[in-house]
Length: 395
Image (cartoon, rainbow, N blue to C red; front, top):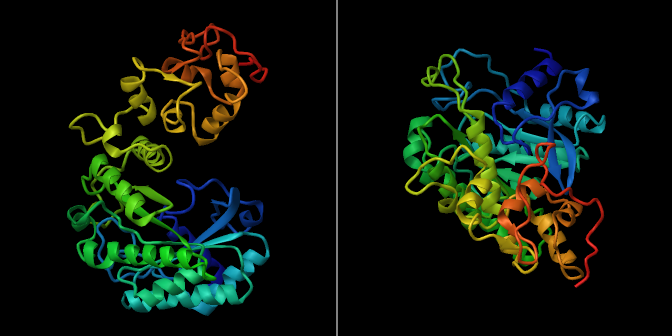
């Protein structure tokens, strides 16, 4: 097969791994359209860069029950040599088709040999002058020296745990060992990162991520969120990705229904509440419940805890401000700055701070008073028309 067509095919194959830097591909960059290359968007340092994802090989020796590349399945197998793929990727980035690369692989010839080929590809890519964003996969049971090498080369490394614990993993990938191959690899990467940051050594200190498959192993939201919280606490992951299961013909799970997109969206919202807002899994789940409610998790929590005990925006600490729907980390900081100078008394002041009044109003107090919450004639706004001017009420 011609190399460009092979690159397109392996890039399409990599789309099955949804652990890109956004949950969903956000389109293509114009320079990639002519080559029919799928491009994703990575959030890097507060900016978005076009990301190219590819596999080194689509051959795999494992029999994961959900995977289109499982051993024995009748599907084309394509492989690049490390030097060839590195050269192709370097050319793409020089032409501006992509500014970031995510490099993964099927497992062929064992974890150690596969990891060595990935590392060789990444090292050559850097040697060819690529200084952009690089996300590199770690294979199950990668050796510590390999993990260290990956973290020197990459800006992000990841280990796909695939399931929230060994019982669920056995249903998806019976040949993989959660406690011997997967979780310890992530632990070793986390330890290397902590040591490098503490020592201040010249080291990229790559951030860490993982991925769970959702909807294929009868796993519960409670199990997924419990493990997500543990990974935040013990590993310091930058992000957990939730990959929606899609049934594939000629696999053991071909007759299972696909995961509901709404469930995946709720899990992402819940994860950010765990990571950035101080919530715990138990707060986001119904009593004795195993699945997130159909409502937005934060609004669901606020309905049950803040309706009768609204938050006074003029005095509440930052942690409590973050519990209010419509108030995230930046808006909480805006409130803290504004109330040093003024007393917040009306919804117009909130809107001027970027806070949607209709979301926040049912759950807050402004100078000791509940703001009006009845919808206006226009549908979503509060009863009192909000002012467009910034807060000016003096203390």
